[in-house]
Length: 110
Image (cartoon, rainbow, N blue to C red; front, side, top):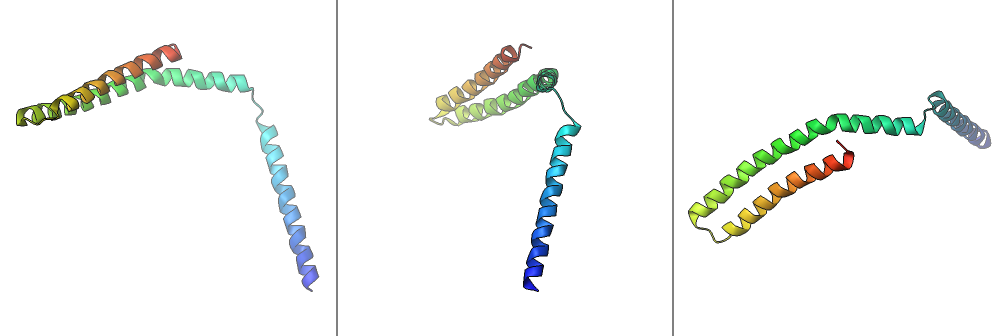
């Protein structure tokens, strides 16, 4: 009885494995596409969203820049010692944001 149960279990595993392999073969043969066409389509989509993404990056940078400017102003008015360091890091962040957007524009040819 035990051998018959093991044999049935093995037979079920074989059938499941065969079914999975057939499904995988069917799925890969059902939608054959050219790899270059997919890459070109992805490039076109990225380029179409790039202008909106750049504008979003500038908007986020403007908000963060204003918050940073208020932070530096408050530190300056309170006479704290690390005001220069905070101002330099704030300015560096703003410059980095603009440079990244410009470099990405030239990289994607937009």
